Image (tube, rainbow, N blue to C red; front, side, top):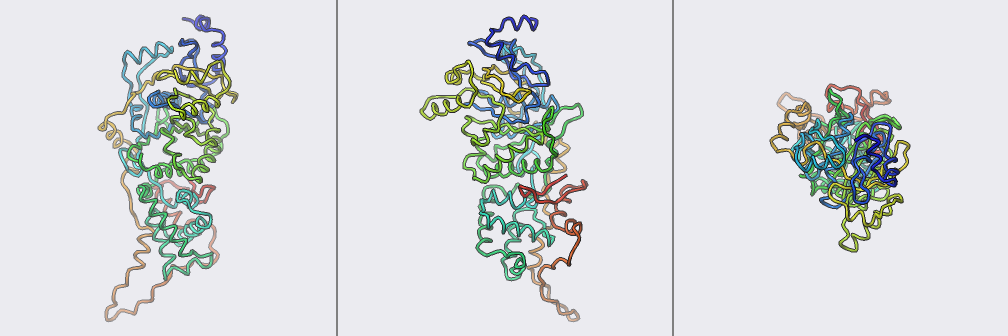
Length: 519
């Protein structure tokens, strides 16, 4: 059937909707328009590639096909040369690395929506937070995380945050590298000890009460499983921006089933990752394709019980990171799982079916309908009758305006719709070029070891030995060091430079989020 013949078979009202998706530039194919109960393969529903950094939401009840939609979009991004980050909470998206299985259901769906289906997988890297589960371990140093971001996740007040900043400043000055949480605890404990109490007096001091709050918060924080995330070798977030030789974007898949009951760990990692990327990437404004697109499956786990500081940080980052060419998609059950300030930043919507069994369900349904532009559909009825793999779509056009609301039968992913075997996953992890760089944890001498050595009693002198000098407080910096000497001589610089290996040019600065910035 020719394009003219195909369009002729589309009712005029549906043609008006389809015209809103007739983009001239590169776009991702979502599926075919549904109108009056009929699938119209001549009316294709698409999303412009250039609009994927305007963020998005994939929502719907359990079993409606959200994960397959995520997979469909991610594999097309990879094919267009855009790297993808997938947070896989349930552990069922690893199949994106393998070709899909040809079958009657897949081929039937392809025929319905006008899709030329061909099995294919994406180049993937598999990661795990701090080594919890399969995947290459992702870690960050405490120095890189920084005092501002750490204060937010510890839920410290302003005074306590300022005190924690003094601790970081002191550690930087004295060459006490803050690699993991025990390093930070050791420095806080030293600064409130008899020997170290006078060290911070000249710049404000650290009260015993504030130090106690920080130490207790660190202990509770570590009990939630976050200790494994802090350490070396530190992950370089630039690894997420890679393409392979044939121009395909690498899909970085973070396995999270092992941390489903540790939402604080997931939230902590997310805050660091987005802040680190934001401050490392240059401003690019509007681009013809994103530099990276994030997908956070089961996004309600991010926000459930989240602190006000975390929500503020996420809202701010989502608002600002678009100008760096990074898109963020949240995948969850209902839009109300995502805070209103974040939801307002999401320009692309794929809404799968919702249930309306209870008064609360009905209230959520009506609230969802109100978030869509006016349309010729009875959305309140439509959203309760959509089948699996069908959704209501509205995206941003190439001019940035919302497209008409379109009920859509979605395409079938071309990669495997299900997890790969554990053996295949382990083989992929060990075969990665990144495995040798990040797999083995390194616990080198840092603040904890240096302060522990200071506390050990000196050995007894022999007969001819001189009487040892009394233990000294940490040596104060010489007067008026140059800026270069201050930076290069700081513990933070050494820690970060070591974690980068042979890469040079690591810049130390405290950013808006308090993270150590890389270039």
